[in-house]
Image (cartoon, rainbow, N blue to C red; front, side, top):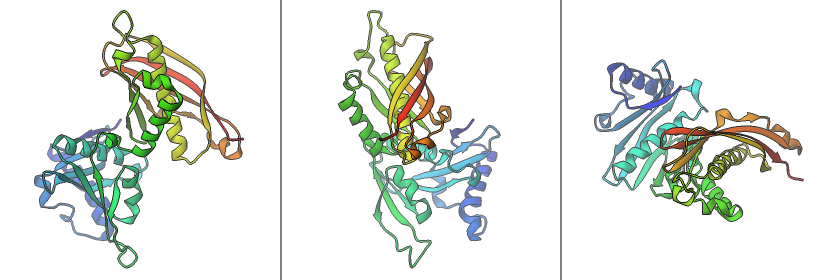
Length: 299
């Protein structure tokens, strides 16, 4: 189990700075203390910790002006890279920037991390000469809008939602929209007022549709991540309703719950994948959907 926290205790600050130094300074033979600067006292810090309290990813936000936030000292433990913790840090820092009223965020990045930030919706505004100076940093910028509240692959998510509304009209009627994608989890919501029954709660059929579409969307995005072709269809699905929904509903599907082998698509054969999603009434899980999906290989 991992969680994003703000370091507070002496031990938490120690593990926070230890990871900064190990990833960002030690490989370049920089001295201890170089992993800190004068903005640490006024910055906003976040780190992902495991059950033992060890830091697996860290990052800091400070403000260059009331409108401009800057993310610096992003670091992920090498043994935990690829698990989505860097995305979690960027998301947490962006949320803080939005709350403080920033209109945009800038990040300086070397070549090896450039692709990561671009996947998070950042655009290069000043390209460095990394041929002559390999350690030079590019400057990236992200204007904070309602659209790019989605932290990872915002353009893909916008395209997916447009596809839903065009090809599955009921999704627009239900008010279904994508609220978040991190590369590891996918979240949607619907408008209760458009799906309400005579009891003042959400139609069971609407809950089923929201849960199914959430799994469908996660699988669709994962196919794009892996550059695999195919059309996603539902083969079988079951849902367990625990309690009625009386508030704005949301649904979450996670990659960790995805089971199946997609490699057959590379050979022109269909693939089968099992997924599950949870539907929430506020913060309370009230329904769980499990489905078997088939990815149809192009003919």
